[in-house]
Structures are given as C-alpha cells and as structure tokens.
Image 1: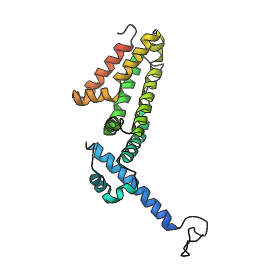
Image 2 (image 1 turned 30 degrees about the horizontal axis):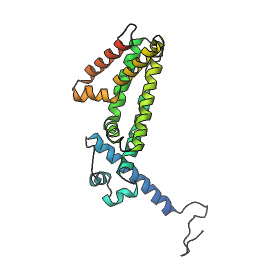
Image 3 (image 1 turned 90 degrees about the horizontal axis):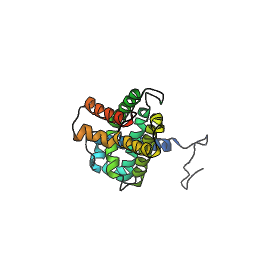
Image 4 (image 1 turned 120 degrees about the vertical axis):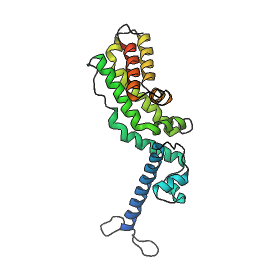
Length: 214
C-alpha cells in the first residue's frame, strides 16, 4: 500500500516499515523515561514536581512531555500504577490462617511495612490526589478492599468465634490499624524507629484479636 507520493505503508512481508517501528519504540522508551522520572522525584520527596523538572529528569523537552500523556493527572495515574505493579510481589503473606495467632500477626505486620515502604511517596500522592482524580480514587478503593480482605482471611478463625457485631468492628479496627495512614503516623509523624513501630502495631492487633481481647 502506498500514499499519494508513492511511499509504502508496509514492508514486503506485510509489516510496518522500519521507521514506523522505530518511532513506536522511541515513543515507548520516552514514555517509560517520563514515568521513571516522576517516580524518582516522588522518591526524593518532591510530590508536586513541575513539568520542566519532570522533562529534565527524563531527558526530553518540556514541550514534548504531553505527546506521551494527556495531562499531569494522566501522568500521575500511570506513575502510581507502575509503582503498585512493582510492589505486587510484596502483598504475599508469610503465614496462613492455620498458623498460631502470634505468627499471623507478625506476618501481617512485616508484610504491611514491606509494602508501604516500597510504595512510599506514590501511596501518599494517591491519597492527596484521589479526591480530584477518578483513576487514582478507583485504584485506592481497590487497594483498600484487597488489603481488608487479606485481614479477614488471615484471622478468619478469630472472627468466626465472635458474634457478628463484634467481628464487624474488630475487622474494621484491625483494618484501620494496618493501613498506610497508620504506618505513616507511626514512622513519620511520631518518628518511631521501624522496630518500635512494628511492635506497637503488633501488640495492638494481638490485643484486639486474642480471645477475650478488648
């Protein structure tokens, strides 16, 4: 197939010409570079970098930044999705529902701290922007729903031994204790070392879930 100037749109084997593949590859690489640049800036504590900063870090011109993303919201959503995908292996728990309560509590605490340390500033950005960005709001809702379901499954034995009303508020309380917001409060706002913050969370969950706990 040719255009009006007689240039071929396809190679002899029916594929796109090499320059088309090259442009597509460059576009993909530049898009990746922009997302990586934004995540690097988040990791350095810059939660609202300007487009010039992002473009400079990515090695492209500021004008070309929005050839790859519709706007800054689209870019932020893609960056958060990338960070969550990287952290996906960390959602695995090192204990199952049949383990002793102490083992399960420690497994949950260790998992949450690993996960929240990995998602770090991207998680913070998600919470800041979710009220204004439907994509991030949906991501946040899905993440919270999944993490809550992990708690329900991990402590199913303890919850089943309670009445429905008690089980509901115990699950809700455990869910709040094991959130990114609690992690941030302990490690950043209150300045606890990681070991101390883990101990606080572990003791609170144990008191909540142990038979006769309050």
